[in-house]
Image 1 (cartoon, rainbow, N blue to C red):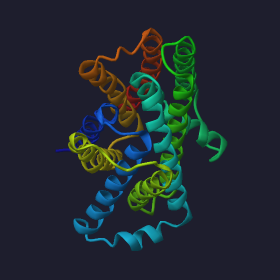
Image 2 (cartoon, helix red, strand yellow):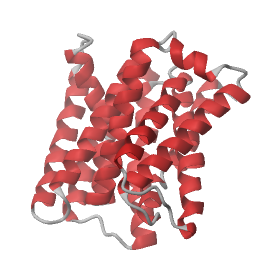
Image 3 (cartoon, rainbow, N blue to C red):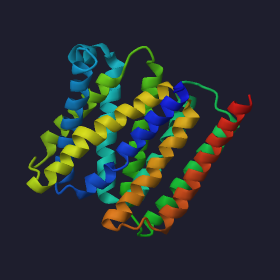
Length: 287
């Protein structure tokens, strides 16, 4: 098996594992802060536990070694988790996932402003398409198809994800996996201090365990491993599957129709990002 095939399969597996995330959040019978607490605690413990037990590492020592960048990543990702779950509770699932799909172009904007990197015209086309799609979705929410505040929270989550990837990219010599585990624990700490109750009904515990102990840590673990073997364009294309699969699962299981604005805005976002990345892949293949 070639490295490219290995990377493709790992990233695809990550997308398939993480796709039920929004659906599980919707199905769990608990308030948002309670979900945040258990999702963060379980995922943080699983990530650090696997890091220590199976990779023969010392998770707490490695948490200290990530330095300021790692702690910044953990805090930013924790804040993004709050934004993500708030958005899931307040607006359409399709809105959340489609807006989240714009994180690669947000990362490109960050690289322009912060890292002073050059961005070509093709990337600007993707950025323009993504922003137009977000505008269409937001306009639909303002018209009653979703929640404008929820859409704003989803955008905050996308910015957080973009910042997370940018920090990890800037620190190539230090693994940020322990920082992801730390982020889960920080999320749990903040949610635990704010939550009126941490009780999850017995009938929701199977779903909570599936979300916090399997879907989140395994999904993000695979998604951070796959890009080591394939390029950014291939990764971006595969990640777009989540923006398609997630809303379909929610629609199929709980009957939530995405809405016309989400369908039109999502089509613009996915077409722009897929088109840009397909052109890149074609150019790379011919070069």
